[in-house]
Image (cartoon, rainbow, N blue to C red; front, side, top):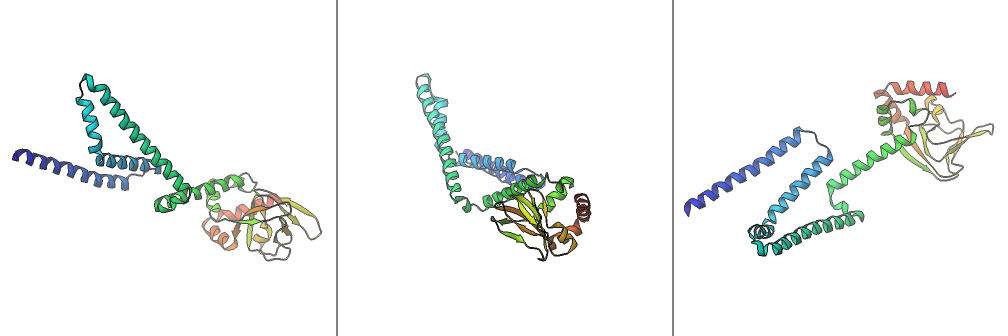
Length: 257
């Protein structure tokens, strides 16, 4: 009896060492091996499931043991018990997932700091991708490399105009460059002539690059509009890190006019 107790203690120590060692090994692999978010999520889900299974082992093992040891007469009943157990486990998991999604949809996700950070990162990446897609077909951005365009989009911030709102008037100082993302802007010149700029077009670029006052008046005449704004200070910083940007502007202006 004492030998049996010693054997169990030894086995417990060995299994405990293996379990503890696996955590250290997993940490090393996680630090040294780059993994996608989906892979990390799948591994965390498997680990959580394994932990729950270990905690619920005493609830599950009697049913499995009874099925394995059942004779022919009792096997049908034990199979029924086992299937009921599986259905209950799957049903409980689905109920948990459904309720968790409902709570998250109504603001419950705020209780999960990691989820909030990950969701913000995904939304930010999606917004940048949408911005690049919405302005990528314009004559100016089509000549820009994808990497430069991606870096430039990070510098932009949105500005919204309601219908008939004035963006700037003739004579106003120019400190921002505008890109029309949606809607349209009507530019009126001093002689009374006007033209409309639409999605993907630059706005106020001549006065911005020449460091001069605006020579036109810009109004959201036909409806609300969304603009992307590049401030002069951001442009100067970006130009120092990307010297080809000013050249790109000059070439575009030469071809446009």
